[in-house]
Image 1 (spheres, helix red, strand yellow):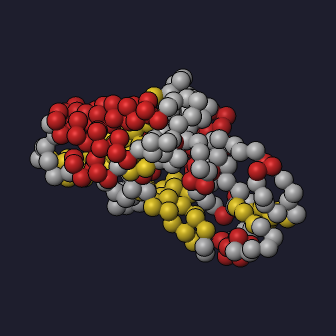
Image 2 (tube, rainbow, N blue to C red; image 1 turned 180 degrees about the vertical axis):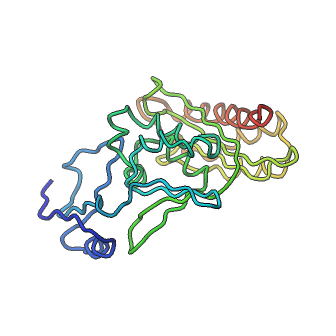
Length: 260
């Protein structure tokens, strides 16, 4: 990298002023669990946000959760209150985002700002309706709304800790045997993780039946990019896995209600 400047501001306003510059090209430092080659970064100035207190996890009185963008992934794995939130989906996905060494270095901001890597964690954030909060023009934290959800993650990968070829995360809210809210998120069928709103609409406001689950699972195929493939899996394989994993994820999330 041909860095000309390195800054470590002590207040958000100073960081914002630096990041709003167009010359020199200035970027904030976030650490991803999937590091990219430095020569691909056309930066001229870097802004270190470590003095701004953005590495905290906080649960509010209403049950919502705030996560600073510099929070290490291992802190998310270890947070006891997150293990109780929405079935522990977020810590589970953070755990498989990388090995222990990477989880202690990488932060949630790195996941948000990197196109590839940690697909399961990005699926969890989509399924849990996480919102990006900006202060002075740059993202400072994520906020997760207070909610009681039945969640499930299913994935196919070459090894347990390898990046998923295809993964599906599902979050359901259930009242009186009826699904009142559904989130179906899939990675591995397009260049970025996506919500399958068609599947969500099929599942919502109805009691689940095998035929309804099959219909929702089949809807993931229509959302797939039919040209998306790589050496790990063809587009046909990815579509088939998305359909299968969606069916399994919905069934698993729904059945968890009977165990509580």
